[in-house]
Length: 209
Ligand code: SF4
Image 1 (cartoon, rainbow, N blue to C red):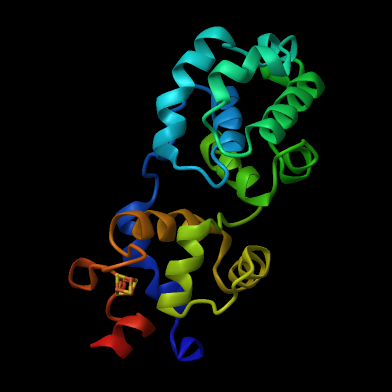
Image 2 (tube, helix red, strand yellow; image 1 turned 45 degrees about the vertical axis):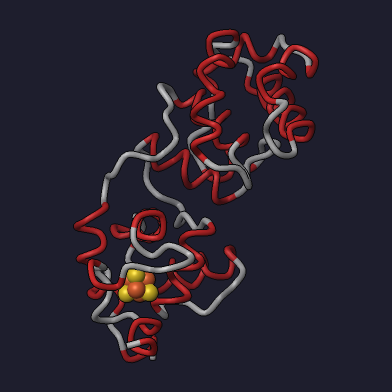
């Protein structure tokens, strides 16, 4: 069970494999990343990557976005789930920030913005390379952490809190590393246990083999 395993030690092969890996969203600036993170909630990164270049050609900076209207953005975002709310958050966010140089780099500053929760703030701070204030818990992280047995929580905030206590801050990349494992190896169906770096400690794997 989870309390018999030294998790800070057990995650080292996972960190070795994925630490510093490039985020699947294809952004060229923190401004682009913020916009893409907001648009990508409950939508595949692939769809956002395919739609974003046209949006950023029209609105290349926070300043340009701050002058846009919902009608202006419609042609670029209409295929995205929940686009009306996302558009409204983006426009409010741009009006508050006004300029790329004002983009906050703390958990408090980022989560005060519309459309940015802890997960998004953690993703943005990872790419800004500022000291971590939390652990990225996305849907992949949740699934894989539950399977492995690091955490039984189904709520991302509860999982993040527990993992922040369990894992030293220097290894808070673990959330994104678990997410990469979930995207590449531990898929929802047919997880590829054979090639998995966590197979020796994974509870799900022990039960199914
Ligand atoms: S051993 Fe299997 S179930 Fe466990 S994390 Fe790896 S792929 Fe997922």
